[in-house]
Image (cartoon, rainbow over all chains, first blue to last red):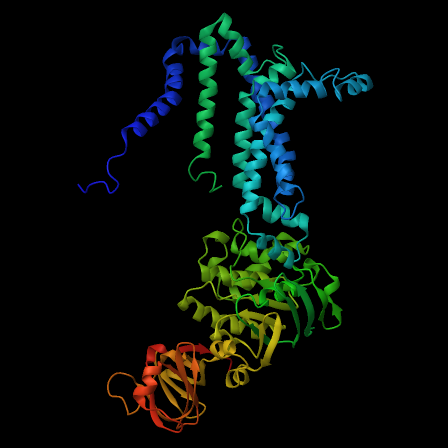
Length: 264
Length: 349
């Protein structure tokens, strides 16, 4: 065997790297080990669990649709060359990514709560109030999921050769026709990746949801909230639902990695 | 109705202003040549409506400068094919028709017919991103042509292709441009493109036109060093029969591979060797001539040789070779060209 050209890797580095890997994987393996597999089917068929799963899937999917409808246009605007204040706008979009979700929930409450800046006039005018409704869950999920889609799509749009759109223009295409027939299909992998990420983020949303939407069974109690509550009453159920959420994350990871997304 | 293109524009750029006036007649191909950054592509973009500019662009009496790019009906082909990767070759070619409101079925039929008439029907169903460079560039030209442009702008359309593909594609491009008969502006760096494709050459340096004329005129009296280097290829016109080309002057050239019909033979000056006595050995193309002039050229010396047949041939040699050969004006000498150094390009009869 030829000797390593750079010599043996330093052992402290390898040790730290190994520790990091364990830190990330051992808790997840622990979940699998402790999951109450014999009771799995029964626990998942409990009405509370089914209700939470249904609500989570429904709200996360609606949130993803909203994220797509609003996020793709925002990404398109951000990707335009020469946009004034593009750096500031991009930073604003990134804020919810690093903001503690509970802060996001409080922020939503101060604006859209029943006595919030916008929520109070809305309630007076129509009698509608967002908190404690599935709509509030969707609002919280869009808040945390939108940045994932915008950043992913904007990255794809900026990697696009601007001359593609110029060619389309010389062929007589209007800006709208070019957007739907050239730009959007070309960045489809980025849109798909962003949508899957946003959906996964929405599915796991906890802090903003419990703060802003509350914790009403069947209305705002999504799977993460159900897990948190079950931990007090039925730890087995909590572990099992956690395994379900973990499985969804793994599926998302598999979908996003490799060339599957690129080869759309 | 085919109309001529008249351009008189000024485009501001950080380093200098690009200020060009030129016209292109129907069916005429004008090569825009010049060093990198001379403003050639900028000019094309201005004509296409992709670059803000002052001045006027007319197509016949129509004022293109008042129209946005999408209403100008001016086809543009870049160095990269820029096919829409998610669309098949057919749908790429049909794109302009679809954008113009032609129904899907009708547009596809017409796109397919165009591809078929260009011998590209086997590419019709392949997605744009699965085509090779040469295939993609042909489809890109078809896409521009299918939209029914009243003028064509080609921005180094052959530059990204490998030498062999370039040769074939150049020949096809010639035929297509002749069929189409619209005014064509061609940006190129390749002297062979200018010699073979263009009816006229416009030389641009620092945003200004420094010379204008037929390829032969420009190469005979290059206005600047750059032009001399660029256009100084040897172009011999003749008729091929197998591996033999008989030039209009009576000169006979031998080729490495057979061709037929009217051809251009292109020989780069660096491929021409010069001897003081008739060389023995392999070169089959050996001609006697007289030295008519020489001039320093980059690191070497460019010789202007008049052959016995009357043809003028440029040869590029090292200063050391000039000394060895003991060259002086009117020195008799021999020039040799290897058969595989002759690039053959079919031309319209």
